[in-house]
Amino acid sequence: MMLLKTRALRWFLLVMVVFGVVLQAKAKDVQKQPHTVITTAELKAMIDSKTEQFLIIDARNPEEFQDVHIPGAINIPAKKFNDYVKLLPRDKAAKLVFYCNGVKCGKSKRAAQKAFAMGYRKLYVYAEGMPVWEERGLPIITGPDYEAKIETTKISPQKLKTLIELQENNFTIVDVRDAAEYAEGHIPGAVNIPLASFAMRSGELDKNMIIIVYCNAGNRSYKAYRKLMKLAYKKYYQALFADWKGSGFEVK
Image (cartoon, rainbow, N blue to C red; front, side):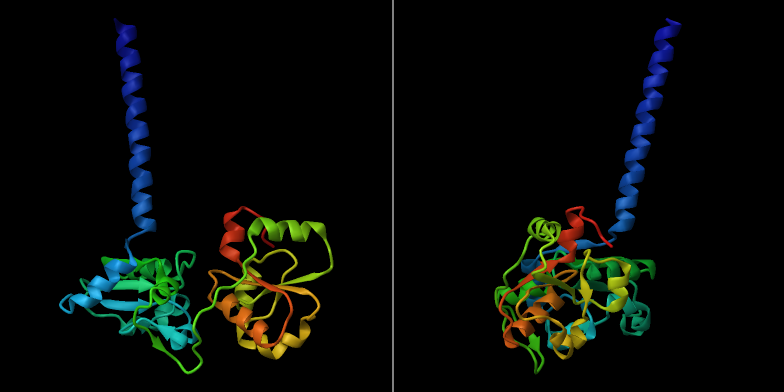
C-alpha cells in the first residue's frame, strides 16, 4: 500500500513539473511575442472603418519609407526606435500597428517588443507587410524614385550552397546590407556592397560573372537587382539571408 502511494506521489510530482515547464514556455512565448498578428484584410478593414483609432508604424529604414509606404503610416525605424519615441502617443492604451517588409522581416516584431517594454499593450503586427499590401493593389504613398514591382529570379538556399561547394569561379555573392549587418554575420564568400553605394561601386562586379544579391528580407536586394538590370548585367539572382539562416547553413 505504501509503495502504491509513493508511486502515485512520484507521478503527481512529475506531472506538476511538466505542467510547470509548459506554463513557463508559454509565458516566455508571450514575452517574445507581445503582439497580435493581423492579415492584410484585417488591416484594410481597420483603415476602412474610419472610426477605429490606431497608429500605423512603418518599422523599415527611412529610405524604404520614402520610397513607398501605407497611407497614414509614420516611420519609426526598428534600429533607431529610441530616437523616435516622441512620435508615439502618450496614452499607453493606444492601439499601435507595426509593419515592415513581409513575413521574413523582423523589424516590425522588434519594434513591437520595444513598445511593449515601454508599457504599450495594444500591439499589432501586420506580418505580410509592404510587399503583400502593394501586390494586392491597395493604396500606397510613393516617392519620386518609386518603380512598380517586377518578379525577380530567385536562387534557393540549397542551390546557392551547391554553387558555393562547387567552387567554380563564375559567380559573385553580394551582401547589400549595411556594413554593421554584414559584420554580424553573412553568407560565406559574400562581398559587402551596401545598397546606398551599389550603383557607384557596380564597376567592382564583373559583368561576365553570375551576380547574386541578397539582404535579410528582400527589399534592398530587390533594389540592387533592379540596378543590375539597368546596368546591363547578363545574369543575376536574388537570395534571402533569412532563408539561408532558416536552412541552417553556415554563417560567417
